[in-house]
Amino acid sequence: MGVDWLQVVRRLQTISQAGLTYARDPYDVERYQALRELAGEITAGSTGVDAGAANAILALETGYATPKVDVRAVVFLDGKVLLVRERADGGWALPGGWADLGETPGENAAREVREEAGLNVRAVKVLAVWDRDRHGHPPLLWHAYKIFIRCELVGGAAATGGSGIDTDGAEFFAPDALPPLSTDRVTPAQVARMFEHLRQPDLPTDFDA
Image 1 (cartoon, rainbow, N blue to C red):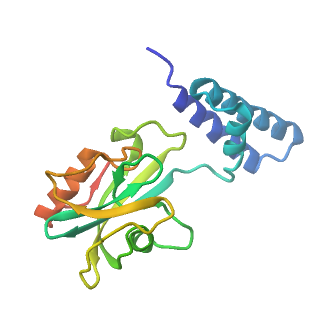
Image 2: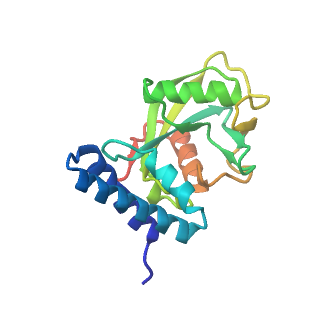
């Protein structure tokens, strides 16, 4: 069985990040810095990213290490779901992104829809809270949770185009006519599950136990 280098890097980063947060002895600080540099070297060796760039990315994380949170808005209209096209890879995804500080999950979801699709919505129900690692996404350096929030259109206007910095299109799609998805952000199985929530609105929130 091969080594899962992504998990190794995450563990090293978690240890070094906590150590640099709480250590007071200068020799301990030096050791934790060396440990973080090792995580960067492993990242570079397993991904091809420059070691200096990898270390710079890891150094941005401070404080006690916790999972990142990705909030996705689920907006339906006439049995179709709102998707936005990502500039990064040309794939489509539910509107959303990393949660911003100072906003509730619902506020994050509504803002993302407004920024990426030009629509006003209000959050009404959390449909799923999933561990990204367990749902078939491509590997990511950070451990992340994904929150899917059902949102209702305010005024009922349909999207005609994307308006976000990271997106360049927004449309509603039927479940049997989905475009190629940006699987870094959302998978076909996740979108299919959102349609199940539409058909059965009394379903409880999904989560990874």
